[in-house]
Length: 225
Image 1 (tube, rainbow, N blue to C red):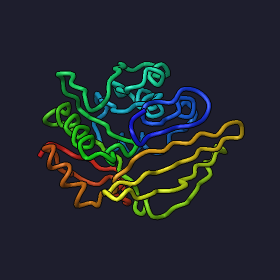
Image 2: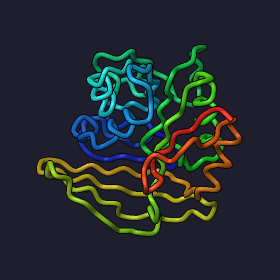
Image 3: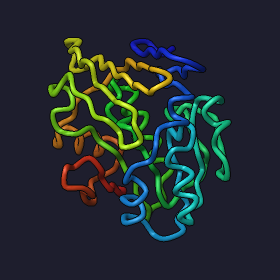
Image 4: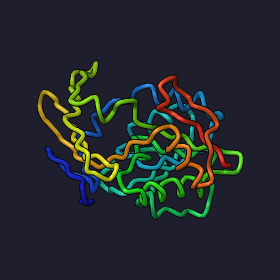
């Protein structure tokens, strides 16, 4: 396990605390629609942190070519129809570029600043000159509006139980996913980023905001600076 990360519940747990079986159950939301509206048709997408293919499979169905990257072999076993690469995002260097690089799941909020920089460097290294990077950010008050919960239309409950400040700008966040037949938890490190801090982090990697794709600012289209 990565330091500060933990997961509980049935089945395999990845180094960042994600439960593989849980991620095979999670439904896709509006993300494919957001992505489709922001990129060219039939673009080749490099999906960083694909997990079990929650977004990979809908993107393939929409006509995109997808290269799915994840450090967990257990996750990648569930990905079908995409080129699969097992690697940490920080260490990835394929020697090629893509129309679109996708960094979803709030990964840009990595608790370790060095990891965040490495993630964004990987994005910059793999995006074509005329391509774009799509990034998912945490919502407003993500770390202060706790505890909170929502019930998914499919019937399971997601709870953010706590976000404990660790004193260095990072929080230890604990989430719980409750299904009728199983419960999983994940504890992970997350660093809040204001819009200004986020744009400064992009600039460090040679990227800049092209536009915010959603009214809440959670989805961003970035390009090379």
